[in-house]
View 1 (cartoon, rainbow, N blue to C red):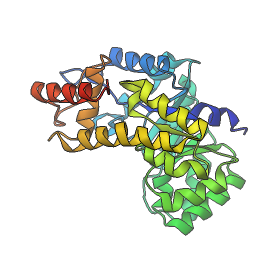
View 2 (view 1 turned 30 degrees about the vertical axis):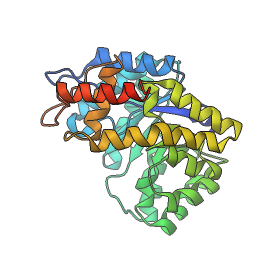
View 3 (view 1 turned 60 degrees about the vertical axis):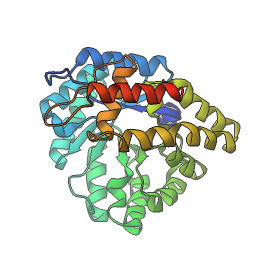
Length: 302
């Protein structure tokens, strides 16, 4: 399979979808559509679900399927849509991949249910999963097997699984750096986490990055990417220093409800959807919302 299309679409800022909920715990499909529209209007070329950011732990399998369908239909041909399975056994993963393809997903993240699998287990899982829909790999799922085994799996998949089209790097640089070097000519690669993850990985072949600013102040995300395209690493590092590091540190340390709750609160302050999550997951209080608003406004982050 020619993966150039996937590489083009994940080059630059990519958006991970935070599942929005109403205050009474129902999935907020209107908010989901607004989230998608905001991200595409902001200039992203790719949106994706992940089991973590998208709160699969608070969803049933049927709800994951419905989220996938609604999102695929709403995105249409406006951007690449990468669906995501959960930590499912191979048969369930294939069933979901077939479903995701039928509703219009362009690819999906397949996640093996066992971290630290053997090379043969990883290769068999991803080869099977990629038969029904092009697959992106979470680098942590490979890296958990150990660097040597993970790189061996990459080499085999590059030769034997043409429908594996890329991977998302997740804080496993000891594996991800050599994996990028080995796979960049064949796979589309983007970084999760923060911009500094992408900056670390970009010289090794990492195409794009996930950016929280694409759903609150896209200009910041684009200023970083513009600096990367110009080769101005000092300017790119300045964006990380002035915007990414302070925001992430604040979101993940200032509120007892935690960083994910703060990210949902950020979406409410941006006017996209409500802050709410499903119980027992806590939300930011009204007072905390005002504190977050002040923090963002004082630093021109919203």
